[in-house]
Image (cartoon, rainbow, N blue to C red; front, side, top):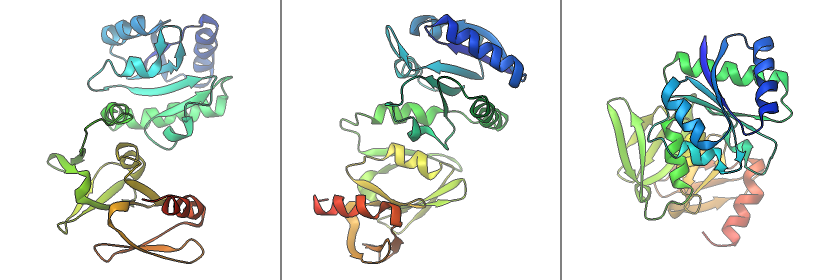
Amino acid sequence: MIKSVIIDDKSANTDTLEKLLALYCPQVQICSTAGNIEEGYRVIREYKPSLIFLDIEMPNGNGFDLLKKFDTLTFEVIFTTAYNQYAVQAFRENVLDYLLKPIDIEALQQAVTKAEQRISQKQTNDYLVKYLQNLQPANNTKISIPVQDGYLFLNYQDIIRCEASDSYSFFYTTDGKKILTSMRLKECEMLLPPGQFFRVHHSHIINLQYLVRYIRGRGGSVVMQDRSTVEVSAGKKDAFLERLRNGI
């Protein structure tokens, strides 16, 4: 069973979700519910759930405010929201998922399955806290990435590009290193400053500081300072060229 908590300021939404989970996701055990951020914080600390269903909009703040109260997230998070302006697509295909109200049964089952897989792998969402902190990077100049023997701290200016490799990623650095991390490329993208980095392809993020040349083509390609060539996807081409026209 997956010990879970529902946090939503509307009791009708909580009741509906509980019924849907009982019918279609019997592996989920609701151990408590909460109607606001402070109450949610309390029940999470008390019950230590593996999964929380978290509403975004609440009267005394939002779901992100609750997550910021934790230094490390030891539970999986499924956002529930009636609003689509929160860039919910940014969390798709990652360890997090979302449910757009009214809740779709198939989407609910898929989200729970994804969370269940992550829980079984004993992986946590502590990168999300880093992502939330990087929404306003202030004087941050480094990224922390998990590697085989711990964590490695890389200066942004030392990263030439990132490349996806199945569920892992490689960082290519200015000193010629190729560093493997367990982070997916989407997680890397969320932690890198968008003013300096650009995802030119579903498998590649480049540091615009080290862009040497753009070569025309259907999507085109770029040559980086380390002489590597990276494909630009056709779907990213227009946004990338617009970025170049506006200045790197």
